[in-house]
Length: 180
Image 1 (tube, rainbow, N blue to C red):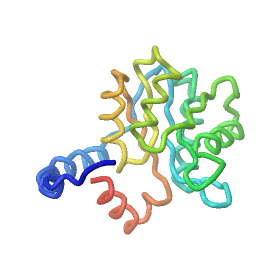
Image 2 (image 1 turned 180 degrees about the vertical axis):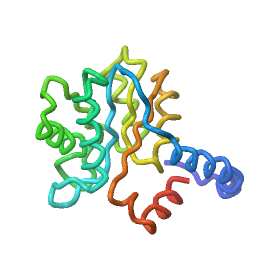
Image 3 (image 1 turned 120 degrees about the vertical axis):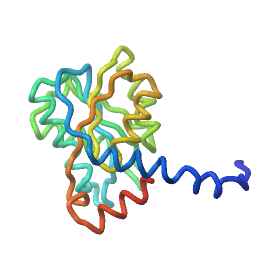
């Protein structure tokens, strides 16, 4: 069991300017160019009826576009199930298949419950990958790129996705604040 850290509120306040700066930097990143070893589609919510959230649909669709552009030979679908099957990676796989990505080009990582786990377990599926496209919304991109580097992907490439939530001003601010 974890013990309460009495310094946590103080650390949260002192880290806020740096985290706000990093999150806002992620919103200004342009899509990367060039080839990569893999495309990592970060998980997002699956609705109770098993349908993808707008974020997951946008991310998976962007991953399929990158694949069809020939940017990488494989797509890694990430994410476990949170409230029941199907999991995020399984739903992403279905979207990729419907978009014409061959089954042999899709790798499934369905153990992770957060972004750290997405990269940790994806690393096990693509151990030699150095350059990877990271597919997620702008609010999430800066932290995702930091985690990708920390977990062994030396050259993560940004691929920002404009999901329906990102397009709604109130949701955008809520997402930015949550990420900070």
